[in-house]
Length: 85
Image (cartoon, rainbow, N blue to C red):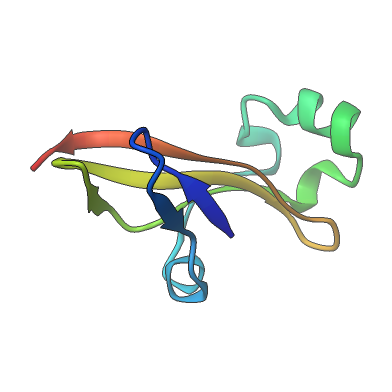
């Protein structure tokens, strides 16, 4: 999946970064679970919020955050600033 940085340079969420992702929250522990269920459907227990490993972009450290539902796919992928380099 390709995203654009603030300078319009492509940033890519690779298979490797997905494979090395960590779970932030699962099921009822996801703050936005009711909104995800209303918008995308599925079972609440199958939703997870995930994060990639940190990467450098434009002098800052970023992570990708997204929601994932086994059977439906990945949704709402965002790049978040987590620190300065």
